[in-house]
Amino acid sequence: MNEDKAARYQRLKRYIAAGSVIWTVAILVGLLWSGASVWLRQSAELVAHGRDATRAAREAPPLVVVALYVVILVLVTETATLPLSLYSGFILERRYGLSTQRLGGWFIDQVKSLAIGLVLATTAAMTVYSLIRRFPNNWWLPAGLLFAVVIVGLTRLAPVLLLPLFYSVRPLGRDSLRARLVALARRAGADVLGAYEWGMGSKTRKAHAALAGLGATRRILVSDTMLADYSEDEIEVVLAHELAHHVHGDIWKGIGFESLLFVAGCYAASRALAALAPVFGLRGVDDVAGVPLLMLAAGAVSFVTLPVAHAMSRSFERRADTFALELTRNPGAFTSAMRRLAMQNLAEERPSKLVEWLFYSHPPFRDRIAAADAWRSQSPPVAS
Image (cartoon, rainbow, N blue to C red):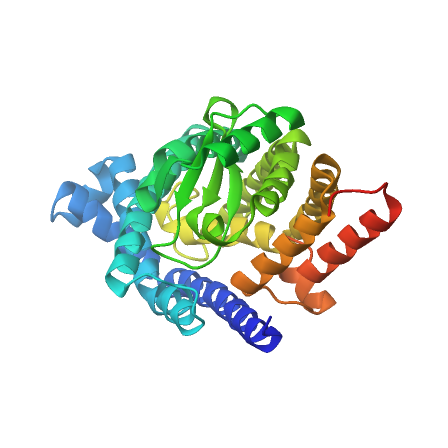
């Protein structure tokens, strides 16, 4: 693998991700500090009720104003961050030979993502501000708990409703492989709806496999880019790793952790709104012009806990690797699959410990291969 190329690619992706966060924070702070957020709320009130500003402020339907404000805010922030998104998601991917998508197709996907984001954001904001009006001091608890339920729903429905909007998904055409993967899932104790081909090749050269959904929607997904170049043994051991997350309950643990973060984020937002609403000229905690402040406070909670989330995820991934080795008894296929994925997806071979701590949700592939070698040396004879 061309390690220098992968290291440069991953470093640029990190720089852009960090820059995007800093730029978004600057936009939100600027909207609050300059009074532009209040002006956006006033504009939403005028649209909701008409040209009479005084009457609009008094009579505009609150949830309509919330929805209009959020739409305007999302459009402003998405437009402002579009250059970074374009560079990271399209230009950089093309430069490093990972993208197969044309610019028009990329923009279409962005429009789809924006439409979904607008629906989710407006629904979330209307829910939060309804709770703020009903429970001005303790709205954060029901809001956080409600978002936890939403996470479960989205995890369950994403492979059915969202994934087909961006990728073709069809039953896996290779009968022997489909039967083998479904049998592997049963052996692991994870019931699945079936095995499907995930059409990623029209957009990227990266390869992936996943076990998506919960309960009745849980299904095996293998990208066409993986089907084209990987052996059945390699695909099986990659899927065995994904099965481990369901067998060990990692999905539910992740949902539980995210739910706690939502509750903590909503609490931080409630404190920030109560303390700083007058500073930024807000009418009160229920003023929708405070959305940027709410986002900053909740986002700060997620940001400071990110290393903890990554550490938890890496521990899950290491245990899933061990599970895959024990289930398939094929460390040779595991090692070759890791090397293929690292090369194909431009994974960094030797990130620094600081980079790993801050950015990596998976152990570096070199560590995963070393762990497989250690497992092989300590285990009875296995398949080659």
